[in-house]
Image: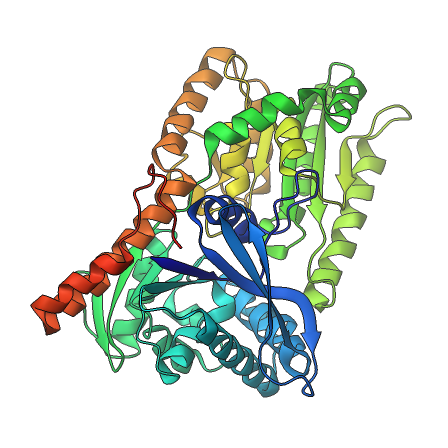
Length: 487
């Protein structure tokens, strides 16, 4: 089969360069190994004098990247406007941060239509399209309008909120009706799926039966596919990184101190202000911890042109300065705060160095940092994961120390508990989490979605013409362990 994966951002496999964005980092290894074509933005824009979509193709392992220059007239309204100033805040239950115009919505639809036209060149009789994330909620509908009959799948990497909250998005009804052009709609958690189904039933008056809903586009299956990582590969990164200069310097600088680590994009959904306040509170509640523990917070800037992100960066820098000024000494800084990214190998080494991993988002679709931290640990002396119960990962990593990120004192107490946890308990909790990670890897997530898309479309074909069901074998995917290529 030919599998075409579509996302706003793509990633390149460059060993020593920082990874930007959880979605791109997650998709990179499966595209490299599956032979899929990955279509996304080049990061450049083109003006209207350049007619039609143009794709720059480059190899990516067994697969390929197709990089598109998006239309200059609409990119700002699409990306910084509707996608990240309307959809992103609402999907993370922050309707108070919506800042959007009607023109932004029109630009969002224009870019979705542009991408649909660009995908025409990748059509084959045995092609399936897998669309990723909130940037392209309407892409399936635009593709159907252009005559695409191929299998279309969609996966949302963010949470999907309750119907009262999603109603804060301008044109929410129009967008969700457009989503029903996909044959398969995937979510991270059962709660996300239930929220989406609740909207379909209450606001659109549709009936969902055994996960299937009928609309003017036909039927769509709604299902849950929690995304994973490659835990063995990440463990290898962690062991390899022990001699990396960045990791070695960090270890030397600790002088026997214990270390907590947080690694996040600089985003209001990540709960960074609450985390710093909780660390501050822990040091106040336990003065004996002074000089014995520090926090390394890596917060890579993103979407700096959006007001809410600029405000957050300023507030966080001030809070870190206040905490360090209050608790620090001439030869000791409680919080080490960095606004830059690191390669996955270096991150794995930093994770292994830290006795506590802090993953405390206010809301998160999954949060792969939580899984990466666990996978990077030394089995003989593992660290402790402190995890927000509002991250999708909490459904699987239930032997982490789960916290409410809005409860500052509760988080402070849990941080202190993590730092004093005995080895036997740390091992028990870590082994249980590793069992979960090994049972749901990134390859299994990838294969599960593609198989379900295959089955859904094969069922539709069979319902119309049992003989035509044989056509489904034209794009039957390989198993997660075989060496067959997708194109």
